[in-house]
Each structure stands twice: as C-alpha cells, then as structure tokens.
Length: 435
Ligand code: GLU
Image 1 (spheres, rainbow, N blue to C red):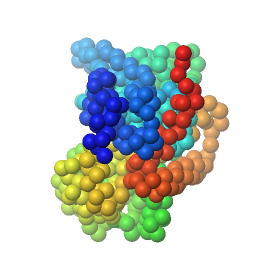
Image 2 (cartoon, rainbow, N blue to C red):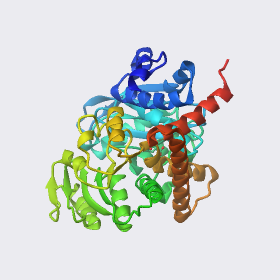
Image 3 (tube, helix red, strand yellow):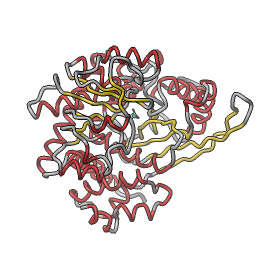
Image 4 (cartoon, rainbow, N blue to C red):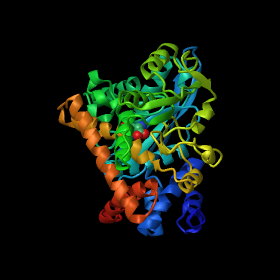
C-alpha cells in the first residue's frame, strides 16, 4: 500500500516535490495518511493536490524587545489549509522547533478533524518558534501581541479563528483577543476561542480535549462490550490534555497505571491516586519525584502492559522503532500525529486498534466551535449543555467511523479519514474551480 501511494502521480512524494516549502517528515506523514483514504475514495490527482497543499501560508518575523534590552527576531507562522468549508480553525503553538512544514501537517489534520466532527471550518495551525519556558511573562506578552497584530489581516471571526495549542493557553488567547479588538475599535469575542471564561470563553473549553478523548474511548469500549471502569490506562503527557483525561478516567473507575510529562514518568501497577498526583504536579510543576509511585524512564511508559495507551503529548511518539514493543490492547490518540504510518502497520498486524487523533483528539476544537457560536450569538450556554453536546458529537463521529471502517474493512484511522476527506472533496467539487 505505501509503495503504491508513493508511486502515484499525485502521491505523497510528488506532493513534497511540488511543494518544497512544506516538505517535512510530518507533512509527508499527513499526506501518506491522506492517500490511504484518497485511494478508497478514488480521488483523482488534481483533487488530491487541491486537498493536500495548503491554500494560504503566512510567515512573519517578529522583532521583540527582550527584558534585558536586546532585540530578538522570532519566526511566526499561520497556515490555512482549506478555505472550502468555512472559516479556518486551529491552534497557535509556541515551541522551539516550530516550522512551516509542521504547521502545514497540523493544519491538514485540523481540516479532517473539523470535517469528521461536522464543524463548519477548514483547518489551520500556526504559532511562534520560541521556547516559552525560557521567556518571562512580559516577553511572552510582547511576542503574542506583536504576533496578533501581524496576524491581523488573515484572522477574523469569519476568516480564521485561532485557539490554544502546545505552549499557549487562556492567557495568550486573552492577549490575542485584546490586541485584535483594540485595532478593530470594539470587542470581537469570536476572533479567538479558548479565552478565559471571564472574557466569554466557554468554561468547558479547558477540559474539552481530554474529556472528548474519554467520551470517544468510552463509546469505543462499549462497542466491544467492555466497560471503562477497571481499564488499565497509561497516559503519555500530563498537560492540559493528559491530566484532564487522567482525572476523568480515574473518576470513572479506570486504573491509571502510569503517567508522564516532560520531566519524568511514574508507574504503579495497582493504579495511581490521580487526585494526589495532580496535587503533587500542581505544586512541584511535574509528576517526577511523586513519592508514592515508582519512577520509570519516560520512554518506558509506552511499553508498559496496559489496556489503553493514551499518547497525549506530541507527534511522532509511536514509531517503527517501538511499535513492536507496545503491550497495550488499544491506543487512543489524544495528541496530534503521535503514531507514524509505519507504526500503524505494525500495530494493525498485531491486532491493536488505534482510535485516531482526528477523532479522539477532536474534543477541543468541538468545544471551540461551541465557544465561537456563543461569541457570535452573544448567548452563553450552561456548562452542562456544553458537555452534553460534546458527548453527543464525539459519539456520533465515532459511530460513523466504525460504520465506515467496518464497511470498507479498513483500520479506524483510514475509516475516519475516508469520512472526513469525502465531505471536503464533495464540497470542493460543488464549489468547483474559480475562475
Ligand atoms: N489546538 C487544538 C487541536 O489541535 C484545538 C484547536 C481549536 O480549538 O481550534 O485540536
């Protein structure tokens, strides 16, 4: 299958040759996944080009005055993948290795995530190449506000709506909202989601990605007549996504046998006391050195025996190098792009299903959509309404993925992408080519 994909005239190799600006491992990986779905849908090469290459990309240099008086340039990016479905939507990431090709891949995944969840958006992603852990709050504010003003011409409530991603959160979204609104001359709440609740953010947005992953997992397990309670879960990543998923799983009676963050990993085969781990990490900034569990090497978490492995950190974690050593019965991807196509094949051969990122990681953007609707309507929903709508949306997307995967006899990722790509391809065909 992979060789056939690479040999196609419009295939992954051809995409990166034609579009060297986006050519990175991550972009090739997103294209490789796309072509597996495109093959099932019999899309022709021109349609494939239209659906893979980003419509718009912005690269900016942000001159920032540092606290010590030095002037430093930071690179900022925003890639808008597809303009066919409505405004574009996706997070802003602050990370030291951020590059255009990475944003292009992440923007493409946002397109499929939105289409799968039935949200009226195309995908986008962007951010600033910086290491927020080495910057003061004042420096991060200057970066965010300068970036917001550079983004001014390409974002807007009906144009492109940023949100948090790795390294950003409510604080940065508040600065972005304020900077954009200052230049508009009035408050524009729908220009960004993931705002603090006091500024019109939805209370459930902070927890939405972790919670959405649990809703999807719960529904997937139900299909296998397997209750969530009692499942032994290991979670890689204890940030906004992983810690919420851990707390929710723990509250529902699952057993968290290991969790990790950038500084360390801890394990307890009898099940970690997650409220205590949360309190420890809140106080010490990390789960590492939590005294009531065994410290293990971070990489070892992925290979521990468990029922459900939840990568909730970053891309490219389950690869051809470690996939054969995984000892879980299922993977639920709360992060974007954690499993490479080669690892997909190894896990498929081993009979380990993967609940893919475009589904299991879709809770955040779904609640972002709710926040955007509320921003436009100036009518605020109750937290329980937000949560219930999220649950319904995740379950119905899962049902479509299962029906498609079963019908075509393909893995869940390919099934999810077939549902998503079919929707976008149909819309692109109807809108046709202008002029
Ligand atoms: N950054 C999140 C994601 O990767 C959410 C994006 C959004 O809410 O727009 O799905």
